[in-house]
Amino acid sequence: MTHWHILGPGAVGCLMAALLDKNGIKVTLIGRENSTGFQTLHYQSPAPNSTTSTIQVEYTTTAQLNTPMDVLLICTKSHSTKQPVEALSSHITAHTTLVLLQNGLGNHEWLAQRFPENPIVLGSISHGVMKIARDKIQHTGLGTCQLGSYGQLKVSQESIAPLPDDDEDWGMSWQDNILQALWYKLGVNAAINPLTVIYDCKNGELLDGAEREARMEQLAWEVESLMGYFDITPPTDGLIGLVKQVAKRTASNSSSMREDSRAGRITEIEDINGYVMRKAQEAGLNCPANAEVLETLQHWQDEKRDD
Picture 1 (cartoon, rainbow, N blue to C red):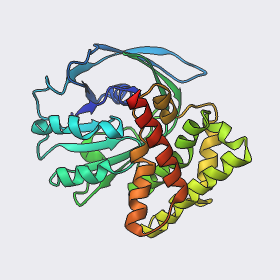
Picture 2: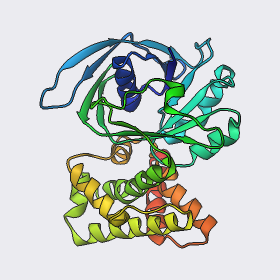
Picture 3: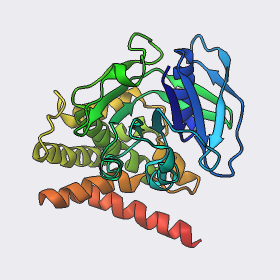
């Protein structure tokens, strides 16, 4: 049986651990060096039939790990990826499949350059999940988990584990063009997340005013223009249609970027709107709305560091 190691025991990492364990896949969570581990994970399923189950888990740290890995699932924040992955590099063999599941884009390019001999899988997740305590998560809303092979070394779903594509709690699907799904998610995050920080509001409140909605539309339009340059087919109703659909569906959610900003943590702005700007420069396109929100949030983060 394939053994999965999950780097990043946050909300998404723990959700993936619970779902993998449920389907009989061996899992080990990897925390930061000197982090406090746990032996049981409490999983609360979505409403209305919410129940809590207890899962026995293995927990280790980057410093304590002493075995090679079959599959390394990377669920860290995008800006906290390279250092812990480098710390695990001696346990990444030629047979290790690397699975990247996080917001933003850019780390997939670094991963392919750093580990050119390893098969790579990229993922996009839309489940709602909240970490209530160090060892407890609440699955707040069912969603999907899309995975797909990236790079020259093609990976099949069956080669890494018998992933459950018929489990409603998983919503798993294997995508032939995973970059398209990731660009869609990038566009949604670029149009919604920074504005929830700027206006200090929940996702759905971006649809409450003409100014907010217009800024959201401009951000989405710029990303869709980039998609055309990089041969990414836009959604059927355009990216703005998808953005508004997500804003309505997650109306009561507070974006992870807003929560990070409120807590004084580094946000993922560099790997979302920052990635948009890096690709815009590569394409020779102007993206003033994305440049504006990027500069605003960078300035706010710099001010908080100085305080």
